[in-house]
Length: 204
Length: 204
Image (cartoon, rainbow over all chains, first blue to last red; front, side, top):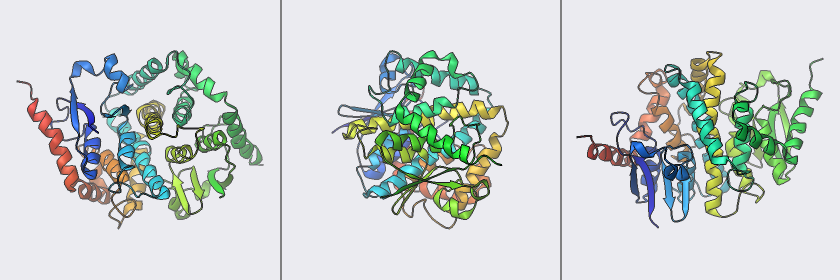
């Protein structure tokens, strides 16, 4: 089956290989999987056609038959699941690899980007652009993929970080989505379990 | 099989449920899986015993028999893989859920945290603490999990972002690890494929 990725047509970094299609190209090379590349001109990243593939208007995307994937981390995990070259085939070994992929993306990169971006003072504009894109994706739908999944669980968790600052209230579609997910009985049971611990451990 | 998670014993957020064991509790509640909780006192998070479970000295962790997992995103994906409650059972549907879990953690949360943390001006200290922890985990080993996996691929990708600023040079173990991974033939082929596009598309 033909695999097609999307990539930038021109270099933003003077050829240092930092554009994120590198992640997917590298993974496909490790497993020996040929692929085709669809180059997206600058003018087209934010257009609806590309946002159907990538809700945030970014690269890379990955197409394999009817499957359209985004997020380089998810694409790498999808490729890794098919080959011993990038992950062991046992369930526990695969889970450890997933832990490290997500550690890179969530425990290390955000801090790297914070320092890099701080110098540009663009932090709030970047956040608002991500939230606007997410709101546009969700508008009219109850969940990200038609039904409640782990994706909604994780996204709600991140959005909850933005309640206290008042940021989320500026995005009513996202705030309603957060409240819809928080209304789930499972969320309530989880919160009660966490709060019970804290009540039981109040310093005397 | 008994599942044990680690969590804070005391609330940092006046009981708002923002501590990240909430993510795992919520996922376990959605699939109806009972669990036990091991509470970690403040004094013990940075000790070697907990860093064996969680290299960055954070919560939550997840134990199921011999499997010890960290990163709430990886734990959620592991739980989701076992139940239709959190993800479809077909491969394509699961990959889409993975995309959204990682979108939350890597396309949205970093920008949220940037804005939140900017106000505290702690960005560089936070980054250095993550890099020190990663260096300590890796010291003496070639790869994160004994052999090259998708975890190394993703972690190298993130570390490459820190070369130009000179930050990575301050962590020789990590810089050597990055260079070891970049020396892989697959990395070279991927970089050449990306650079060829840019050479072919140089504006006239």
